[in-house]
Length: 265
Image 1 (tube, rainbow, N blue to C red):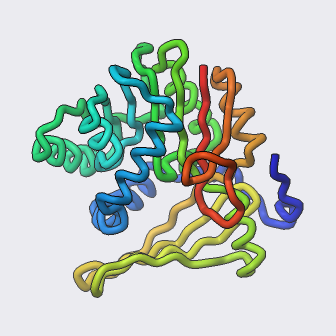
Image 2 (spheres, helix red, strand yellow):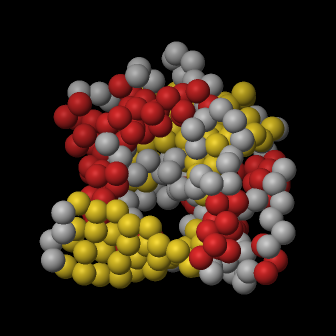
């Protein structure tokens, strides 16, 4: 299990989760616009392969995509023949997801809902939290989300969480003192994230330029080591926890930003 000898040199702000207002500002129509540019069809197909493989999906199984965002993963799973329920607290995202499903001629049960208050009877073989969807809330709320998702799973069910690789964030912090930037865009539109890495959380300042309008917002994401993730998953009721790199097979790599956690009942 990786250890991070420099983590103790960073400031700590572990439990500073985002407010509902901050979440609404960060995950809105602008976010969807830039994510659709980044997540083209070939990219989505590669990610679906990873979800299917690491999730151990078998024909006829039922999947919960939560939060589902604008539905790129749930739509792909439905196209592959799986029964899918997608849940997100954003009405904007659910509208987009329902529209895309209708245009594609596939059936997905999209619902507006908050994972912190999710209360579903056990009915799913797999739950998916994809593309850094976990860790924006306080520790208590994040733990509750894991427990709620576990409760929705059938015996033998799996939870796949795609999250930030802390080894990558710490390497960026000490290479760049401890702040770095990521940018994406199209034409004159762009989104810039300036990130400050703390011991327990990444804090971001986002600048969005779209159609000539400029706005800024703040976001933050919890950093959990493999040991901490293992403790949280087991406390939520999972019997085993495994860690993979963003490409699927093999462990997380220090030079790659994403880490995939798979819990099994």
